[in-house]
Image (cartoon, rainbow, N blue to C red; front, side):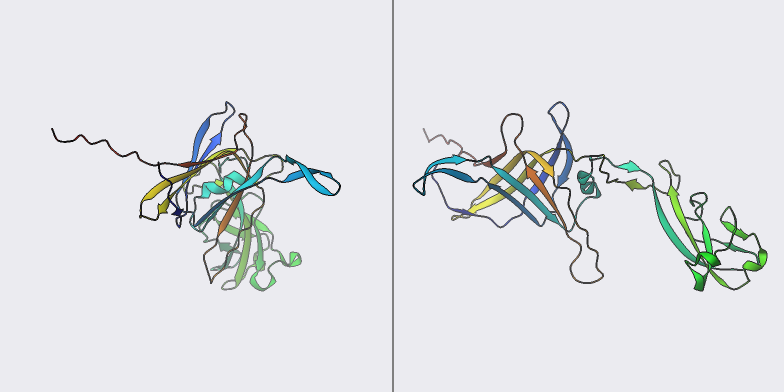
Length: 265
């Protein structure tokens, strides 16, 4: 086939597959919303020198990275920073302000009032929130907090209730998913295919594919949430490693062969 100059201005679709213990590839994420995808390799060369000049080259092993940058992404993407596992349930803090409708008790109204972790509820007068000396002791029964000393809660006064929400793995009302980051777990390795199209000088589009045989997520990331400016961007970087067959990265160009046409007889 003749060689034509090509150019590219289309980000890649990303197919991520987890490398399992048998060396196979399990589909993990089909990711088509990346804004920018980058791939790079580098390999240093060292030289034996004679009289101060380079004479004999020795190539060090290649290293490389593959990066995905996106503002629209699946939640599952974050699990790759851990061990790829998403579990059910979760525990987190919640605070609500309540006006007492009667002396001696307050009725919690937050949507998680029935999911309060046992022993976690603390109630304060609104202006004394966080002051342990002003915490009100009492008991919680089906969403109502009753003060041990009834006079600690006055009708029409405001109180702040702080508690931990505990959503179980089989909760009837809420479905919570959790990704846990621990030093005891390590990211897996992934077989990643990135697909784009090149355009030549005649306007022909040619599929261009990059295959990373063993990509491992770097365990550093930052999430920044802002009320103005651009939406949050997630950037995920993988180290490109050599697999058991010595493969690191392939570039594949796919051209369709012209269809043979028969002449008139």
